[in-house]
Each structure stands twice: as structure tokens, then as C-alpha cells.
Image 1 (spheres, rainbow, N blue to C red):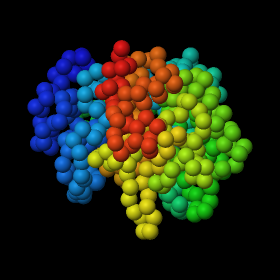
Image 2: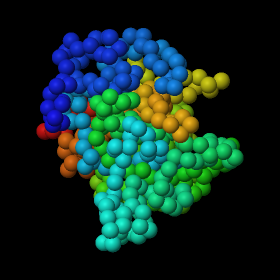
Image 3: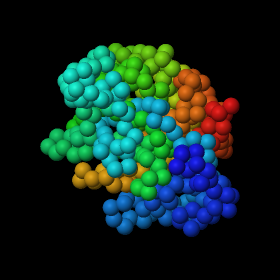
Length: 410
């Protein structure tokens, strides 16, 4: 069965019913992935909605939601479900690339795949077959340990005595590109995509310490992505080293990516601050570069996320100069537990940014000619306006996949 025929069969009428038994507020394409019913950022019917926090045990949580506060992904899927030709790079601290719902969408470097002239596998022949300066970089690179395996195993948070698979990157991978409509787990924004994996850290940083090498590793990773075919980069993070020379190196790498038409999408951060104020500046969000798209987070009612932690008020960072667009943050997505594939409810701008990255990749599947500036403009101009974002986010709206793809198709 062709992909176009599959889409035709999946297109639902306006009176369609979700797997949860609730009526869909809008028509669209609903995949058969069993946990799609919890992916409210993709399709939000509104009301008091119960989802699970994790797939490993009963863990229900009730969320307040307003119908239509989602990214319009199900309607966008009637236009495109993605393409393996689109390369989306991820910067993070290691990747569980063997996850059951992700492994089919991991980038395979064409210059390091298949047999070499002697019949040996290029993936493991200890040769730089494509001449890019990296040996056996078939899926990306580990810039923390300078080797071709960007694996998930890192020092567990701030502990130096235990190594565990890192969870943070796994959720972003699933949001952007979990295999869709395969009867397994969840659906990513892109059912088909090529995820380039670039490991930039290994945790193990103590309280009050800064990873002084992170800006340099990140700069190398961004240049690698730009030189090896990525058109969009997701970085659900930031650098905490304010050293001017480190920031200059990072800014130069992002500008270099921009010169090659590559868009960097970053999370605004979860401190609840106005990052337009100089004392709250965070990087790369506050660099004055037109190939950076910074994403704030909203809840399922359409308001900027706010919550308390002790005596602190936290939530989405904001700022009409430095935060460009917003996306919902609570997304059920891929996870890892004891080295095994699982699923969980993720939150924060680390979830909002991958939603926008996924939609950017989806738009590129429709129009591969989009460069960084035109892609950023398309996402911002097709955003759905929300009253709660006026004066807080530059475009005043929430990313809208359906509107973005219709515009990309023109």
C-alpha cells in the first residue's frame, strides 16, 4: 500500500471519534499508535483529560484543557507525514537510538554506510570514508568523548558514581520523529525523518559548577550539522558559561549554520523570566541572529506555563524580542527505563522546542527549498494567535502545523 493511499484511508470526517472515546474537535489523520490518545499537544479535545505519566505503571494525572490548543498536527498529516530525506539534528547529552519506536528514523550518513572498496562495512572500518574529518560517523558524533557513538549513557545527573541512560534527549527524539502509525508506542510529528544525533555533554556537573567545555563542543556540533546535511537543529538547552570568548565561538558557529540555510530551534527556558532584560539573558536564545527560533511553552488552556516550586514562581521564559513563538509542553513521548524502551509524559520548553522542530522538519518535507530565514518566517507568520501570548512572545501565537504546511505547499 502506498503512503498516499494510507493517508487517504486515515483521513477522518469532522465527526470522528478519538481512541479515548471523545469526539475530535477537528478533522484530521489519527494514527493507530496505542499511546496517541495521550498526545494532547497533537490533538486536544478539551475538558478535564486524564493521561498517564508513564507507560511502566498506573500513573494517572488529570489536565485542564481547552479544545484546539494543540499544534494542528493531525490536520497537517493530511498534507505530509514527513520524509527520510529531511535531516533534523539534535544536540543533547546522549541518545538511546535503539528505542523500539525511534530506531527506524535515525540518520544514516550515506558516506559512512554500506561496503567500502574492500567489502568491509564503512560503519566500522575505522576510516573516514566521506572525508569530513570524522571516522565512522554513521549516525552523528559524540563531541564529549570524541567518538562516533553518541550513546545515551552518561553520569547520572549530578552524581559521578553512577552511569545511566539519559532521559532528556529521548523525549525530544520521540516528539520530532517517533515512527507513526506502526501500532507501537507514540507518533512523532514526523512519521518519517532522519534524526542526526550529536552528543555535546556527559553530565556529572556538581552544584554551582559550569561545564566550561560545553560551548565549544556545541559549536563543533552545530558546524558538523550544517556541513553534513541537516536543515534544522533542535537544542532543548543552553550554555551556562558566560565567558565572552566561549559565547563568541558559539555565536560564530550558529551564524555559520545560518550561512548554509540551517535553522536552530531552542527552548526559551523554564525560569519564568523576561529574558529581554539584560540580567536574565540566556544563550543562545538572546543572540541577535536571524537563524535562531526561540520557543516558549504554554499549557493546554493556551496560557504561558506558570508554577511554584517552594517560594519560587517558575515557568516559561518570555520576551517579545528574544522569544519568537510558543508551543504546548506536556507531550506523551518516548522514554527509557533500565535500558528498555518505555514512554512518559514530558514537559518544559525542552518539549515545546522539539514540537516546533518537528513541524519545521514537516514543512521541509513539503518544500525542501526553505532556508533558515524563510522557514522561521513561515512558522511565525502561520502561528495561531493567542491572547495570553500578546506582549510575551514576538509573534503572539502558538505554532500551527496545518497552517504552516498549507503555506509551504503554495
